Length: 457
Image 1 (cartoon, rainbow, N blue to C red):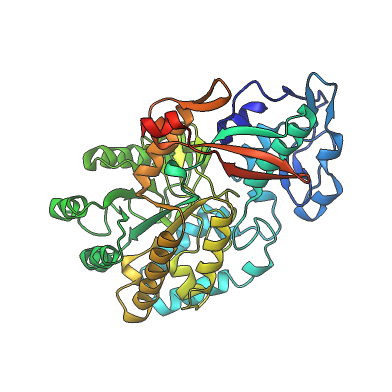
Image 2 (image 1 turned 90 degrees about the vertical axis):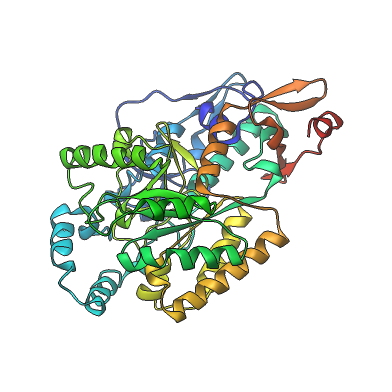
């Protein structure tokens, strides 16, 4: 189970006691906690509840034991983390969406969708989301469950191993505190034709973005359109196949469509993907030939398919890097919540920065054509620009984050005398950090750059 910590933090492998899982008879899968408010989903010798509400009755941290040579946990930490990241808990949630889970309901909606006026579609959507505030998990407006579980697991293991301070490879390059990516999903012909003006707008505030383009049926994708995006330093990615809600209809249909999507990825030289309406099934991703995906919300209270990956950090699903969507989409803000302020976005940005996470923003050229929403988006860009100037925020394209996360996975910490150094391709951009125990809490700090590292830079 230590491997989960090694993957998340890039720790040295020999400073902590090894961990084992207590042997026990097969059990039911359910909800429990590991420390205060850290919801888990899986099997636990400490017991499980059938609902989130009952999870507080079973705190697995009380059944962690050490004999001085190894630490035994009553559950499989890797299994729990994967269950959360892959949203395997979703169907056990009270208030789960029949629409999000039912292919028949989605098919019916998309069958009549084109016949409904936009105003009617939005009223139907608001009716569907009317009880979103009653959803208790994942936690709104940003969920850090996976990140908090890693912190609690490391904290407890450090205490039992007698380690007060441990080095790891910092999450972002050049000692950045957090990371920001801008993405634009192009859903209609009008949105495609507004792309040039949106690039002008992004550039006027000093940003580049990724454009996710629907390759079939919605509109044509001429070579000139593709070349303009790339020649200006923006990124071009694939957005579903035809955005009809049917990508995950069943495994056979998914396989057929995934093959076509992969073909477009090779044709256009696209590294990344996002599913239409962010429908998803991470257990099927092995059929994709992308380097990274951007289809999984951190918390999906305002998406047709409920759930959420409960983390603000990139992570691997097989060999695909998942870049979670960590903020509310512009469409949901404007047309579901009817909110034309920056209040929610600012709240989410502050929370994510406080946990050194990935700030991932989705906006649509289709919904920014009108002056009012475009004015809100400009205010957001101005706020993001100021945020980047005031703090150590790495502003990147999604492909850059994908490449960094892959490089970081291959890096290792090695001891040189009394110092720790990073070895591996890309090491010149990486920084050593430390996790320390202070008054029973885990805190992070960046190491000072050594003379040798300064010389290398």
